[in-house]
Length: 419
Image (cartoon, rainbow, N blue to C red; front, side, top):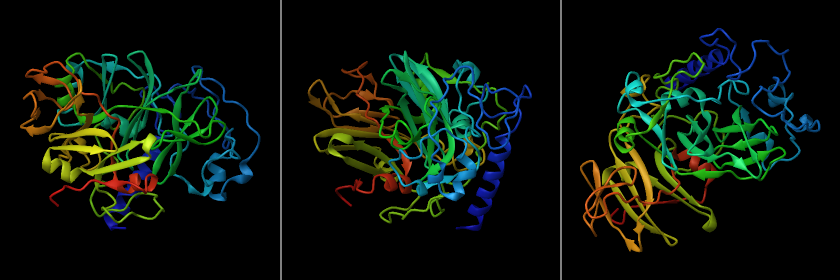
């Protein structure tokens, strides 16, 4: 590992451990956003907060844990005997459970307020549900990783794992229960492992699957989202809202505690698996997974950025991938707004009303050859015969290659026909 990388992660761990217990502006010790200031004895689980359900008591199964994890999780009510993985694959990432605190009561502000602290090129997770458009700045998600929210009448969990560059949104309604998620402090394949407060089961952020505990095997529903620039979001959704910095926590929003992490040639943090050498470990890829066909696809961001558009057909799926420059990396420069321009991506079905459309990028927009209509980065036609029409979004994510390949080793990497 490069000396710079070692120093970066030493600083990162110190920062996260210190902020895990940094007082809020109101002087309350932080473990969860609404936790009382009374400290629990060492080695005991925190009392459930008033707005969450008490987890179901589980039998003592801590003897199944690797010794290196016992002191971190030994007091949890998780049923470790019910597991879809080898428990040796779990690693403590540094901060304790919810030491990176999720946001359970997110507040939102209009553009004129967000403009005071959010630069136009900063990356946001863009989410649209039933006409309700929300932007979740990565300058905030980098410090919290999980937002439990309700958008357009749907209960959702918005997640971001900086170590994998994984921004994923889930429907948190499963069966008859709405689940509240937090950060477990554990990693698997360097990816965030979440926990739910109702059963204390563990969930893999990358796959949305419960991997340990009462709910093992349960699957959360993925919801379409995209990382785009704040400027793109404002242009697309004039009535949109932005996650507020008024979180109840004292964090250095706008700065990046993972500075330099996304450098090609650097090593993934706390990743012990084999690297897939088909691409550099830290290469960015636009990824899709079609569960019915067990089809995993990866499109190198470098290639997509060069071409602007990729029209593709895979196993009966007619796809188009858009790339537009103007979005900074959240994981490069210490100041996020000064990060490298990696651009924004989005993926859509390119069939509309039975007509297959073929796209190319022209300036900041995308034009279909069949009607000459112009489309923006969120798949809305803004000019031409199809103005006002919306392409159907396809669930995708922009990951680092090492992490995607670890969970989807059979991935097909897209190659340009001319290469």
